[in-house]
Length: 280
Ligand SMILES: [Zn+2]
Image (cartoon, rainbow, N blue to C red; front, top):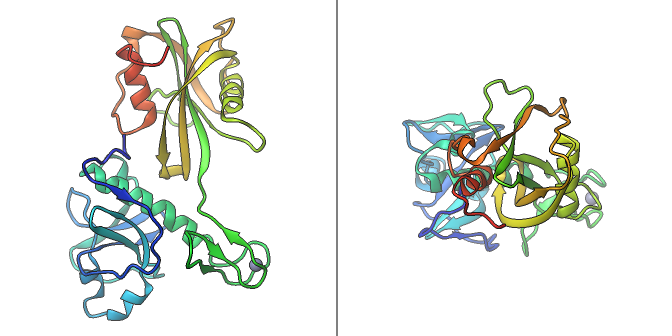
């Protein structure tokens, strides 16, 4: 999956005072675009490149995390830095681009970028916020409000009926691939409640015997995905929520479509079902 970057090691320990060195990486975003080296491979500008001729930029850099010995910094400028050999590219490149571990670095940085850019001002009193020196948070000195990074819990559900798997396609994505039932946890729910509610809402089915599989940070939607297998409980008759789904149907194991990749939890769970290697 996208977060599996071994033997490289992701280190998210908070370190606001870590001094950038010239070989560290710099992330510059504008909405859903990111500054990348021209070419097919994912490659970020370095601190040395960004600060050459503009040494004052070093003072703007915000430490995000490290992978092995390299630190990753956000450059929170309003205007793209002039940098020969680099251009803005869609953040979606991180989904399929190579090398995968830099895709993971990029998408994780994009989640922090959205959180940082959304908290320049306090949502409670409207005064400017400042980054905390003790933890990964923004503080308001005026009213005392503290805001932590946005991570939304969500579930992915593989509904099974013996040797059959329920798969669906989202509405409004004509060429979309088959997926599993998915949805965000609502306030006041356990993740098990989310599983039962989402399955009922999207396809009108009851489930039982929920088995947790694994989780995945999915920064594309600021979420933390939790994967479950669940057995059909009762009738297999599907009642489609047409506002969300274009199609949902049962596939016998040998007819389950091969996932496009194993970078996502959905792909990994579908693959595990196809191979019969999932919790029963
Ligand atoms: Zn405030």
